[in-house]
Image 1: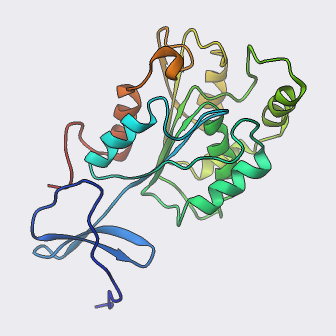
Image 2: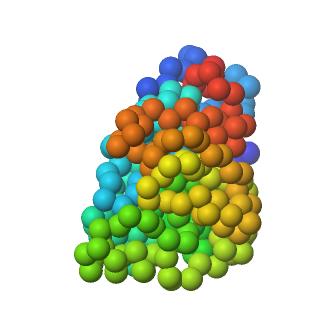
Length: 243
């Protein structure tokens, strides 16, 4: 049997475990070991990537993080660099530094520009790497509407909408994906649905009159995103922790 040392005991994020479970960090792998059943239950990781001029602790991000953590997920919601004027050359390398050892237990949730950042990050992965899936919320690939007409804002728009994406390569690393849109989104038109469906194979969910699915629509809870993550990961809604 392969040695598991060195290891350390650590409490799981607000998850109560039975006394015969311990959480260990084994190198880069994280999971629950059932000392009675002698089996390893790997924790699923969810990276939540915010959008343009947003932060990692606004909109429905804090709510979704709490919900996922209560169900035993490890959740990472980084603040992306220079979010007021985001650049591909900064956001994609930032994700590469943040995401550790992506595998089939790695999932993403993105909002707006965060969706495209995830897709561009997937392009950079080694050919053998495959992640569990992604939930794209109010993502755009074609264009953004109703932007301010300032030159620096338009430069950002052109960079993200005109820099080519190798969709076949990105999709090759993506086991499953769901793309969620709103019928009256002022920034993302519904024709973006075709790209997510045809180029990434995403399941499409269209919500009625939810604007840009952000705080402007009082979107501080987002059960549709939670349901999409739970379905994608094979978890049962309502289950808490690993017990």
